[in-house]
Image 1 (cartoon, rainbow, N blue to C red):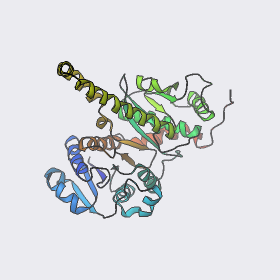
Image 2: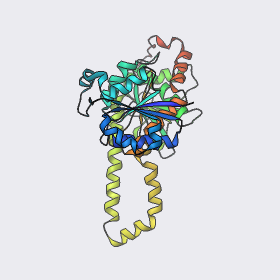
Image 3: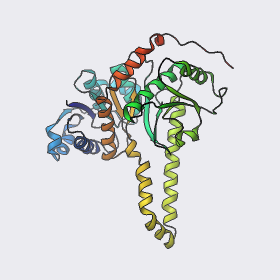
Length: 347
């Protein structure tokens, strides 16, 4: 059974080139996929022509309107459905595509997708999630910027969505969940996170709740799913990315510092390449906007075709696994979860 992915062909630093090349790479991995490109046809068509097999499963829909990286969500909404991003999202809303991938403006993508697709039943706010490498394996982390402030209900919703995603994308039969906090003790953290922890301990779902995890424990692999508010999650992610870039720069400088250092690099190149592959951000490209009534994937704006292909692959995996159906089923099982959650006594 084939599936169709809508692509914002004009979103991202390298668009539309990396979008087209990425789609061709994704097609080789998933031959049953078809693509709808939205953007400047004069720029997209010659690129698609270079890939006859991709062209055979693709359609191009022209628009001159593009959401730029500097556009505020309010401005993007005013541009509306006439933009390449808006048209791609609307294709999912109309049922012409099962998912959408964009490397464009994150805030605009979230705002436009939420307005057009709405949230799934039982979910009050969508969340941005991604897969990150750890010392043990990989983990899912959310929210990464969609919701600056969160109450306990939001955090519990994120935990449920993250748990389903970890089972779907990482193949974990029973993923563990941790709440990112300033300490592991039950009394640590603000009221919302302590109330979320109390709910997760008692929730009527087969969830393996680990309790609180600190920042260093995330990268040690303390939990398969790490839940936090969007402010903290975004700061943690950007800090980790910055440290990784700094460390890479230190390594390059060290290996260029002397002849013996260059020789050492040659001798250890195989091991270094293994590490580079393990932490290559392109392998983890493709942040998911979880909780929307449709599959929406945000690719990093500065990625290349390999990274964009991986983002498309995430969309395809979510669609084939019927991810949103699983989310809906989990919330249906909770029954009265739609009502306000009871408050726990503060310690």
